[in-house]
Length: 369
Image (tube, rainbow, N blue to C red; front, side, top):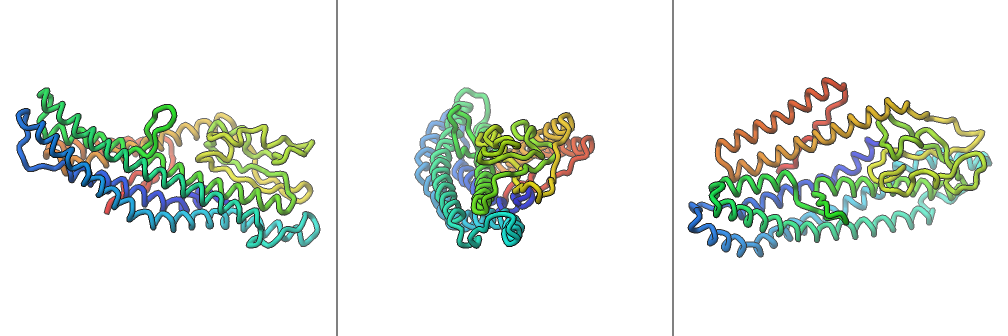
């Protein structure tokens, strides 16, 4: 079964590649914005014209960054899909094949010859490749828009006398560095940054491959029932189904159908960012592994986990802000940005001390070369 730790390790290489891409794009934008001229109200429109004229050069920079990344992502995606299947299915298959040898369940073809598994891997490979290619195109377009927005907003600030040119460019660029390069704009108009969107996509691919190939292999053995794992801090869409047994095909008179749960919904059981996994359950043979957690204990742990994720994001945003300010801001701006990072880190230390949770320093880091 694919544990949360295994999922994190499998997803990490792809997530890091895109994290580096976002960092490199922001650096490319900052480099194009730098100027040695003294920009005032009198010549800011000329500066605006000149910087917008360099948009084609920025476009070439970003295309090159995406091209250099593409070969790496293809290899890591293929590895992610194969390993997600192997690490989730192999332990289960070893157990089921033994039961089949004893005549307790149907026999299945060898794992490497199971066409169900092959077809599932091929389908997810194509879907994930298509999603990432579309995301790359969106990143390219939005990088251009971020660049234009920084120039436009900075020009307005200088023209109205609100800020000096250096302050205007530094502040606007830093805000975008915190916000991130949009990788998706959803149907509600919400912008998802690379940092927010890519981990969700990558982990969902790994989870979906793991769950579906497990179900495929159970079908090959004629096993319908599953037991759902259990952990404290499960989200509301999953918590009611922890530690319970369900029938995947709705044929059982004793156990409820999996279709009666939130299965199939993005925030439901086995959905996006779900850390649950199924175990094949065979009456008279299986030993039940899990039980539900108390409602109040689970809800408290879930709330704390969401607080910690937000604080981790806040630390990363503050660090991105600092990196931009170092290139474009004054010494005073850099000192203020450093102070902001320290404040966010202090908040995290206090939270960890109060809750007793484990601090994840890796989730507070930004990708740097």
